[in-house]
Image 1 (cartoon, rainbow, N blue to C red):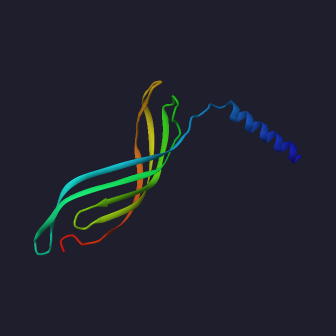
Image 2 (tube, rainbow, N blue to C red):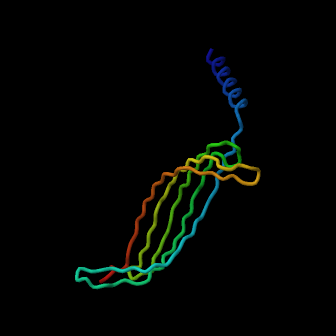
Length: 138
């Protein structure tokens, strides 16, 4: 009896998945680099003005999962998860490491054989932990 029930369940599951549409899933790695320069002004308790030019740079890398990488569906879901490293060379010499995760729900705006453009909301989470060699303004 158990064998027949298991066999029937297996046949129904195979028939269900064989008759459903095929989905194109995308799994890959990504890397982002960023940088910039800014002027920073800091006022101390004695109202003395300090600061200077700050050059910041960093990298993000991680995994990317997309439910509709090469398909003509209207809706897709994308998950980005990874880590980051950023540094700044102001007087404070800051360094940050972090973890980030973002969920994007996309709706196809333009779909053709060469490209797929989509728009949609994104929700994310980031955690940064850092250190500084010197205090700014001391």
